[in-house]
Length: 91
Image 1 (cartoon, one colour):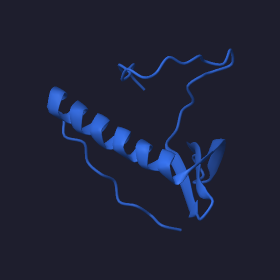
Image 2: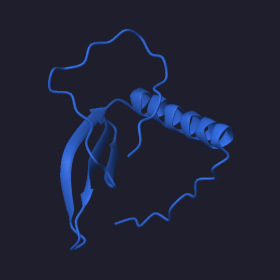
Image 3: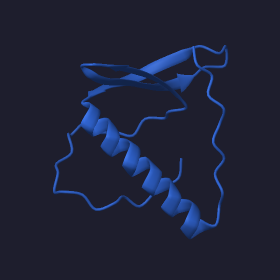
Image 4: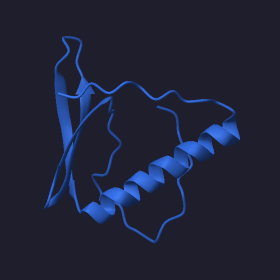
C-alpha cells in the first residue's frame, strides 16, 4: 500500500506499538450498542485471518463514513483515477 498524506486532525499521540496492518477483508456488525468492525487478510484458501477489531459508537461510524467518502472523492478528483466499487458478498 502506498504512502498517503493524512488529513489534519486534532493533536494526538500514537502508541509506541502503533503500526499499519495489511487489510483486504472486513466484517461489520451493527447493533443498538454500536458498530463492530473487524479487519483482516484473505488467505489463499479463501479463509480470513482477522487481525484487529474495533468497537465504535454510531456517531464515530458516521464520522468514518464521511471521512472515507470525502477522502476517496478528493483522491479521485485530484489524481484523475476512477476507483471502482467492488460488489459486496453478504454472508
